[in-house]
Amino acid sequence: MALDEELEKLRKKKLRELMMRMLREDSKSIEKPITVTESTFADVIRRSRLVVIDCWAPWCAPCRYISPIIDELARKYAGRILFGKLNVDENPKITMQYDIMSIPTLLIFKDGALKDRVVGAIPKEVLEQRITRFL
Image (tube, rainbow, N blue to C red; front, side):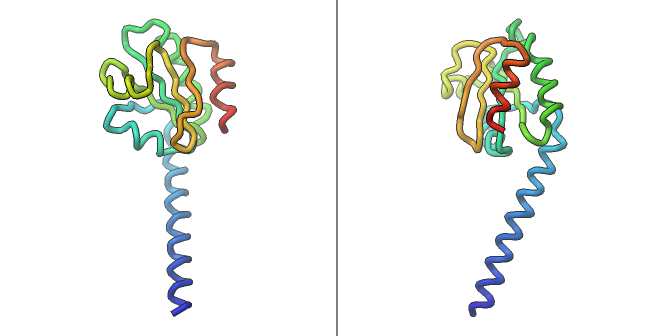
């Protein structure tokens, strides 16, 4: 009986390791921000250890300013940081849930928990430092 229990523990451990490896390999292929909606938000912030959600709107000039910066950081940190884009006009529940009053707002999640928020269009170097300190 003890042998069966030990084999079951090993099987579960190997299955967890395999699932984590698959998630890491999947994240490596994501070199651009993914689109996030109210229906996918919870899954996205749990998908990777470090997730940055860019809350934006098409009419927002500062949002258009930081968009290429977000794209560049997504390529640079592919596999280590998952970047997502959430259109605040199309997803009001998330906007209200996280008290987003100004855009662009970047929400930085680590292990599924909100760790920081960056409001406004700030220089790439400053933004990169604010994000990568959670690596």
